Image 1 (cartoon, one colour):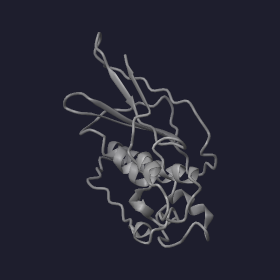
Image 2 (spheres, helix red, strand yellow):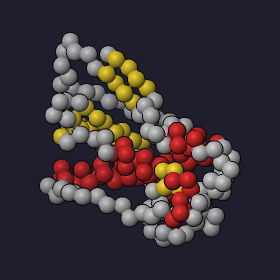
Image 3 (cartoon, one colour):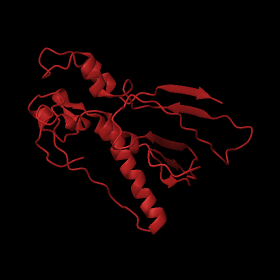
Image 4 (cartoon, one colour):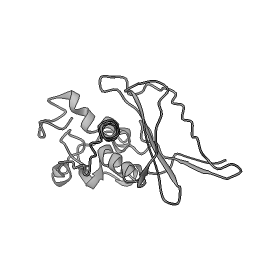
Length: 199
């Protein structure tokens, strides 16, 4: 995912994944894989670093495919949004029991000392070409307190939500930030909830 830093999408179209939500999906799946290694082999990961740059922002180029966290106008790419979502995880991990082994779907589950539960679910297979495909993911939570009220806040990163690359495409894929109202892209970068419910 991260090799050949300076290659560009115009020369290597498959590098589009560095610009879109696939990079964030890969990151979350990687972290989940590291959790599974820790669980199965007692080999914990203590730090995760990302060697990225900001030259697209410095050179005022939008989404050219470099291994970057930000692009023109200092707009975060979806990979940075993925890091921001991971940062919302809490300090205590919750055990995940899968009904069947499936590499495409995964969940990272955590809770705080105050028992706030934070889950990150993903649907991603590296060789899947149709990122528009939709699948159902069923999550069952056990051990919740009876007769309690729960606030559910969902924040999605997909083709339409919290996705600066998709927002950039919607405004016509400008080459740079000159004469561009960055408000739409800044709004897409805010990591806003997509659904709220009380039950």
